[in-house]
Amino acid sequence: MVAHVGFETPVPDHDPDLYRGYGTPQAIGGWAQWGPELRAQYDADGYIVVRNAVPRELWSAALGELQAMARSEDADCATVAYEGSFRGILEQALGADLDESDKESRLAAMARIDPRVRAAHVRKFMGFTRTHPALRAVADYEPLRTAVEFLAGEPTRLFQSMALVKPPRGREKPWHQDHAYFDLPIETRVCGVWIALGEVTEENGAMFMLRGGHAGGPIIHFQRRDWQICDTDMAGAHPVSMPMQAGDLVIFDAKTPHGTPTNRTQQQRWALQFHYVGRSVERVATEYRLAIFGEEGKDVSC
Ligand SMILES: O=C(O)CCC(=O)C(=O)O
Image 1 (spheres, helix red, strand yellow):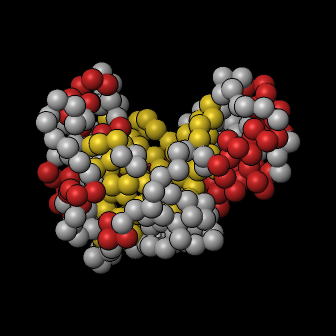
Image 2 (cartoon, protein in one colour):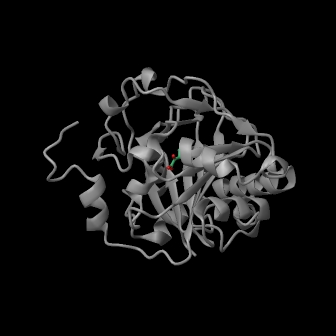
Image 3 (cartoon, rainbow, N blue to C red):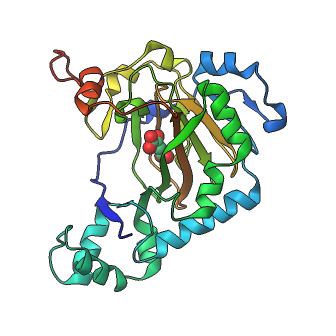
């Protein structure tokens, strides 16, 4: 498989007030503390944090696999996104403008770049569970799957896999609801799972979530620094921040507003993210999604 490659556009820095944490969430200490009473907590808060949820041998194998993909010339996955500045590095190696549809010249340019430079610019991998058993093993980890099925209320399937790297100074992922990105019926209970693969802090790009924010339903998204909730809609909100250690995770409802700030440290921040839906759920048209989440025709501005 030759991955599709994209480049993130640089964005202006965000207002620091958008990621001011008002406490950290109540968390369970591991799967031994999992129980049916947690459904009420999930339904009320829109998320559950589980510490020590993925054993070290699974998360360290996953991280090793991702770091090898980051160094490689052609990561074996569906899509790789690099920092925008990496396009210039590729063009310099190529000695010409980059034609994204010309995979051969892109691969030739990649081969001329130091693997450490490739790895330093990677932002995101998508679609890797068929080609990387060590990553699939995390998505299929039995206690996690059991918890997700319990919260979704039905047998589920994995429908999206991502690995998210925030390089030093790596950009914010602005506030959003994941459901705004999915062509799925609005009533679908989509479960997201975000897993720390190293230490995650407010400084290097921790997850921030708006407790109970899923209960208000879909929020209109605007194309600003990203496809996102308007900053002014978040003014005065009191989000929780979710610092984590490797192997901790948060299971969240895809309508829970969340975002991550700029990485202000010199270290990369690594995370995995999976989304699961009921096996019977079918895709709907993009127009249906945009009629709900898009601003078009709603006479609103941001
Ligand atoms: O890992 C991150 O920085 C944010 C990921 C996220 O929220 C997303 O991709 O939906």
